Length: 496
Image (cartoon, rainbow, N blue to C red; front, top):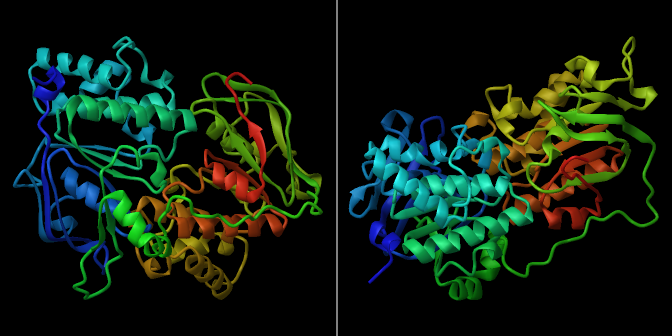
């Protein structure tokens, strides 16, 4: 006989028959002619280059793509023989951003949210809440604990618990470790392993960094980018990890996959190359929001240097980044630039400067790309920076077109930035900021959601900015990024 958890969960089967989806605002399909069958209890790793439609497929499986007014549907996508849009409660989706999925103030209420939307009896809801928190390793927490006090790994496990409480049968993980530190990655991986041992649910996981999940999956499905008016299958590989990586390693690598063991080209500056003048500094800086996350911080940043702000989730790296960029008021102390860069009639305190004063001096790539989009098309968005710097329209669009080409975004030039995939939005946010050529560029997780090809191009662009004299400051958990760029590390720790 199985455990109580095994009895409560019923693994779902999935069938895709010539399935495809085109967003209403797009000319081309996000993915097309997708065919596969996933048996109940299978554990599938879903791969594909950035823009191949992985997140669209996951949204389709979760039943959240919307109706006919939001896009065009082809074929069938079924869960247990029922249209995925009608299979309410049979699938549960966990996304890459822990903060975006934390809905309510208390741990118990947040975990219960999905069950309440399914109109389950109160007693059953709280029984499921406690069971789910226990499965993901959060059973020790009090139900009234504030979700604001959780680390990134804990919040992602909380999101997983909220999904599990609905007893979905199909667990969908869309890059669930992309924004986590190494400790958080391990927490989520181990929690998922325990979930699968307890529930035997069907699993579909999307992750660019394949090695994180290889020990948990028994099948790999690879999506190819759809070609206009093509009837070629949207699935270009399907088999066990050994079969797919053994027979198609070179094809996957060419398509941008992070194939295990792949070598990474170094972009470390030559040892003879020394950093330039100090362009930005902190002076007895205390930073935070409602309370100080760090105090008495004295740092200097040089032209032609890359600095990686590292540390665990929740210690304040993003808060420090916003403060360095002049977008968040210090609690005390100040952030200043080299005197030659101070605008006329302004004091040397970047937070006191107007937004136009920051142009060409300090640029910020936000953790959530949508926070910086201001234009209605991708091409216009990439041209905003050069135009703001006084470039002619012709020059601005020439710079924008070059950036879009390098970032593999040229085909989306007329698309609305908000319709791009997560990885595409990130590349656009970086491209638009680099196009403005600031003296200091602050980047919050610049490489999340990237396949190997776009990651490599991102590295080249960052290295190019450094070599052109820009001081690049990046918040990141991406160890290969830090190593290949030879970045200086600044460890941000709690209370420091």
